[in-house]
Length: 449
Image (cartoon, rainbow, N blue to C red; front, side, top):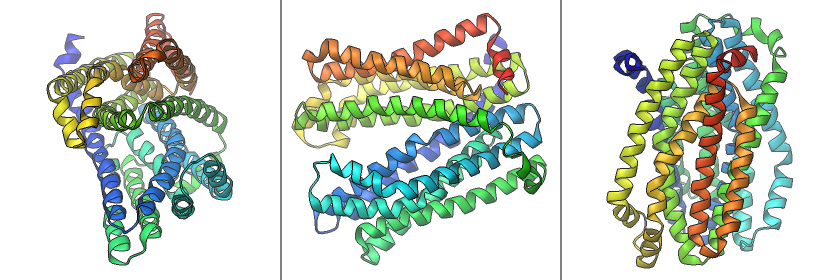
């Protein structure tokens, strides 16, 4: 353990994978801010409402399909660690094929999805009209958006975080520039914002495929045409892994959606305060995601190489830096939480309401870091079943805590969220500790290949 902590090259490897993803994550809220700003300057509020509703529909749909990135990262990292060039190539082709198949289903069914969402929405007719317009245009970007998940996952699995960073930064920058041009310059309103995102997604896919070609050449992989006949090999394992991660993501979305909708029933100030405090959760996510990505790539590589020592050193180094980042975030939330709230909202009533629940948020980084780290471990090991089962139990615990303490209102909601995060980490930690002690974690992960 001490040797791993003193290994400077190992720490550099962790940061080489983690920091680019943290930096690229910064462009995500910036894009949302620009979207809101350009649409918010139009003459009617329903334009902004339409983009908000339509954008949420797209975001949730694509987020639930994020398993394409996670599964690709784990499988590619294992192939990289095993020096299996053919498998590395096949993983990318399988992922792209699956992404485009799912995108075709989304495009064909987008009308039914929109009708179902709008039938249960209380939004005004004007907001629904522009939400439908935005969603109907954005959905045509699905083939590129889903392919980009696979491309990012493959590049990360190939131990390269620099190219995914540039992919995200350049794609989001194109989106921002086109937003301003189409909406403010050409006056295309909501359709302009949607078109900007679609063009940016396809631009990102073209750039991503160029990055893949560069990495492909660097790794000296076989010609992609020679791998087409192998796309069907191991597809059952890929589908099973994607199914498990999808169900895990569905449970996660259920908990966060309940948090939003139940908060709305507690009053306007509460739902506004929770929206402010969810920004703290996003900060934790941006800070910890990079180390989770590093864990995925490095764990997968060690498993592919069947190297228990490398796996152990990866766990020690990445966990160390995750703890450091979590402690710094907890300290920042404790000392400057009220100042951060004031930056997000200048409404006194919302500020007071958010401050009441700040202690819950101060505890989040140290609790949530284990979720991110252990997710990275199990994604790198392509152990989707354990992730699915633990998330299901954690989601049940979320609703149980809420039910038991619902008389405490919003405090019960935040207690349920903290319990949910803690249960996710505890369950995965218990599974990992048992399998590691029995010396079966590495062997079973390798046997699943």
